[in-house]
Image 1 (cartoon, rainbow, N blue to C red):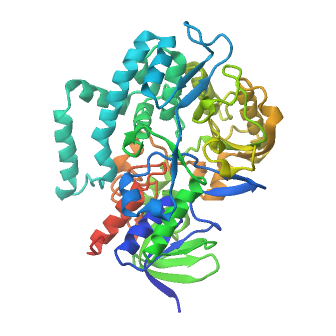
Image 2 (image 1 turned 90 degrees about the horizontal axis):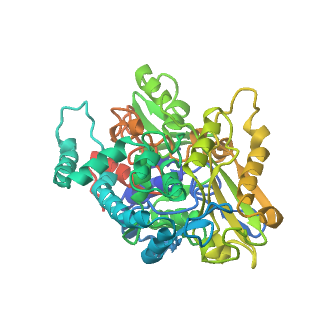
Image 3 (image 1 turned 90 degrees about the vertical axis):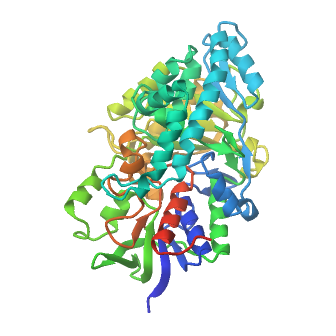
Length: 540
């Protein structure tokens, strides 16, 4: 006899777990199926080397919606987010500010200290920084309601789904003219051009522009990256916009907290249970078939994996019409990010600011100039990993010592660019993995020469490795690029942005849907609410 559930969720990433929690909370008998031995998808903690625990893929938290933390009581289930204090941008000798005081740029959460730091570089930048910060917070507050809205189907004659947009339009009309103009700029400009309007300090612009390229196959001068900058600005911790933190115990502890919340509400979670296909009969999803042949029946199936995995890999040919399938095949993934995780027996020592100071406790951004950021993209455009990549480095053990043995540390390096598709004749990623890792270490050594001497172990993850391990197509961390043509009512494809799919009873609930990627959880929450509404079940 096949097991039967009200809802089966494919994929135990954080969005799938969030959906499970809300469905179980409403009384649905819910099962999560995860192909790996642990839940979390890309938000996992693993002991890669004896005694050293890493947030292997996703490594920081900011976008997780406060309502999810509150409604699922995640702190009660073990979630503890430790704040990261600021961003340190190391520079080479002679690249410091005109007023001297060190070859680095260091912004911290203390606003007064940051303004004093910026005055070393430029009095006008220090003044503009305050106005810029307030304006971006205003933009984030304006756009924030979009994160909870179900995108309308513009082909539908039903006007009701357009009501949230009408409210947003009224809010936009009431914005000061200056804010209206800035919003249009954010929707259309490149991150570099947008920041050029505000600042003159190159390391400042480069470091801020980095938020506009994360997870995209675009450079800082590419139109559309200003929106991605805003997308990351919408993150908040305890109501503070643009605040970032790391979960105590790594990002896996966040996934585990959501999983525990879901289980406490009645959901079941089955790991090491890869799904082979979605069972569709007469256009209706009836459940799933596992790799081992077991059939599980369900009234509704939710997929938290990306659109390519769901529609191309898990559905049998002929279930979907050719026009829809063609739209899915046109979704741009273009993975562009790699990851290097290091186990070290001493901290990196930066020539621009030597010693183990506070500057190592936040993000360390290898972004000395806009030109170097763009040249890193130039390498990727022509099918090569960046020889001098942009790196976002975090040393979690400085705020959470439990991640490594006493006196030792783990270092997380998020790297761009590492294009999923390498140029013909340059070999495979398996051939290039170690060379890519060497390029990352060489880049760090430009600013912290001791790095080679302190490394005990390293793990190099290419986009292909990310795809193989997590199932993310082309290793794209957002389940599809956050480009403007792939947002809102076009995500994942036009006409199907309301979490429903052409197969009745099959829904999407992962980052492939609105409002996009990042450890946000909004996708899973909205999808669950839409499923409940569709089936006439009242949300708890």
